[in-house]
Length: 142
Image 1 (tube, rainbow, N blue to C red):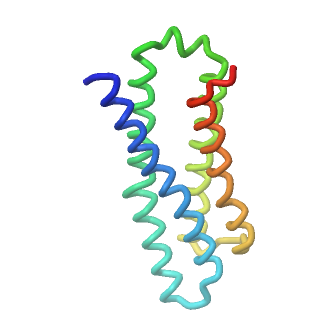
Image 2 (tube, rainbow, N blue to C red):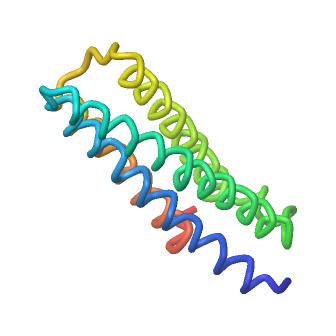
C-alpha cells in the first residue's frame, strides 16, 4: 500500500477516534445528571457501545496506521523534535482513552463520584491534545 493510502487511513481513523473521545465524556455529563433508572441504563449501553464499538477500534487503527506511516521513514522521524513531542501527546491521548474506560466502568458499577461539571472540564482535554498534535504535524515547529 502506498504512503498516501496509509496516511489517508491514519487520518480517517484519527477522526473517528477523536469523535468518540469528544462524545463519550459528553455522555458522562448527561449520565451524571441522570436521575432515573431508565436513563441510567440507557447511558450505560450508549457508553459501552461507543467505547467498544468505535473508540477502541478507531484507536487501534490510528496506532496501526500511524506506526505503518512512520515506518516509511523511521530514521528521519525519530530524529525530529516535533515527532517526539507528538508521540508524547499521543501517549497522553491513549492514557485519556483508558481513563475514559475507568470512568465508564465506575458508571457501570454505580460508583460514579464526579459531577457533571467535572465531566464538562474533562471533556476539554482531547481538544487540547488535538490542537497540539495537528500543529506539530503541520507546522513542525522544531
